Length: 445
Image 1 (cartoon, rainbow, N blue to C red):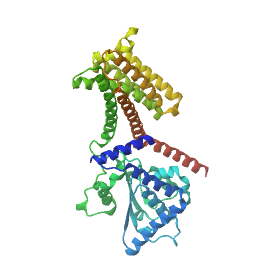
Image 2: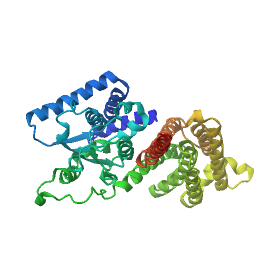
Image 3: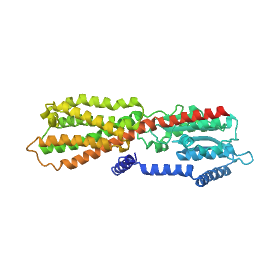
Image 4: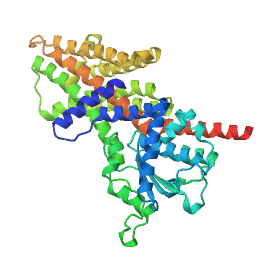
């Protein structure tokens, strides 16, 4: 996964230079992870950060003691805000900050508060003695917004449970105040796209600040952007397919040039597509068992491979199929059937080796696949007595291997993204464990 992020950084750099879009992934990850470490693991730095929050709030209150305060917090700033407000709520009446009753609204965007509650429970134990319990009309109205393409933010049901368990009546924050949606098209970048979303901020202002009715155009919760949810699936996997298609195309063209086999552009597209589908079926079948324990998802790869087996003779020209299976012609085996059996053998051997040696990562897939591809290429070239120079095939094979590895890396990243981040399977499971543990602790009291 680290390799994938490094590759993504390079691709985003190229996209920036090409003028397509700009997104500094490295800065986002460094800033976020650095902020998390400071807040969670270094008590001295954490207290300094919370002290700065208190100083700012006291300065605002001193400037206008009667003014209502609305807080907008993003990312790790939501954790700092929540910690600071809880610390203020835990103070006795004599030491309670004067600004606390003036806080009327809290808007959190891209908030990882739940992750902090689940992963760093010791951070919150000193804040379990909440003393400030205002009447319902004076509670802090809290609205949380998160895009499903944001790897950091999500719903805050664990925060609501924590507040319920520890008497946190200072917030008006129910399940209906969590707003999840798909409004931003680029996964990851969604974490910073909130700032450019006028509707989300207008929605908060209309719900909490109560503007004049004539200005209230935000009655409905933030809607999904047209095609945003589907785009994150289609565009991501289409990009992987394009990379893999390019890998096969480079090797195909180098071999075709070596043996002097020309073909119309449409025929080339069909041939490359048929071969790419076989490689994709092998790749997906080999990788999914390494990424999830849900066995029903294991069927995706074999289903794709079966579809590739059916489409291979329909897409790839008979002459190309005969050349690719020429290695098995002396055995009296049909060339098309021979290639498909070889692909099935590669799939079976790769699956076995990946399970037997899980630390090998993608090495079994790439090594076995490269051996099979090398055998086919050698058979095609040696089967033509008048073939040309062979050396151009070597860099093409290296490019094929690299792009195949790149496509597999991206598949891993996107699969993990969709299942464990976008669908939040890991966080939901942790929340269930937290709820069960909290219920057991309450029963023992």
